[in-house]
Length: 266
Image 1 (cartoon, one colour):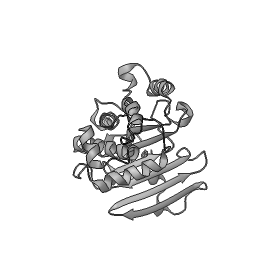
Image 2: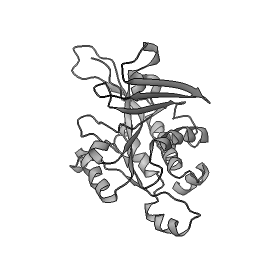
Image 3: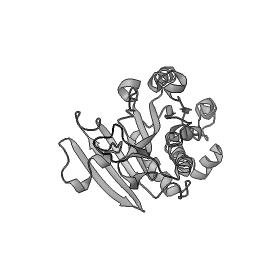
Image 4: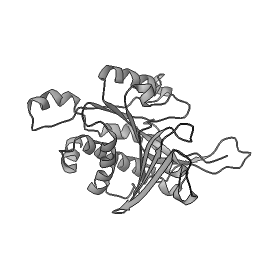
């Protein structure tokens, strides 16, 4: 049984030679941060069509989660994937009660929400705030409502220009646990749940996630794989959520500094 991964860079690594037709890859390193870009241009491959950007950084449990280099590295990639103007809805996907799956809700809690301030911002040009809303839909086991159903209702009501979905991811490489970020224009396709994509929500969807779990290799007679997570997962979620939220805030409010955004959300 192959080990599952959400990370496109692991499906099409440079070390394995040529990639399939319709897939382009690019890799670079700057200031200690590795960047791998995978462009999937046709359907029928192991991941949906779209752009996948993976940033490899030091372990989140020990880094300064307000480090401007890390924040800007994520923010600059995210900003390039989003519409330049208009309301953005940030959706924190996952189960707050399960530590390894709590990245999305914890990140949404730290997002600088400005939708309620935009009428004031329009009257005062010095504010220059972009409208942002944040929402954590919970999980179907707790609400009886699928994440896609709730987000479809919110999107229908708010009519955002785009949705940013934040979620915990699964990796096949232990070296990426809690120290990589993947951004994708293909949205999210959760296991056993309706996908969160432009097709299902009606607006562009950018997925942002950090690998927090990994399936271990199993013998053929094992019915289910064993899922493992780092021992410092609490620190990874806490600092990873702070880093992602600051990056999202910086991407959406570029006129504000990281220090100002930290003050406004603390």
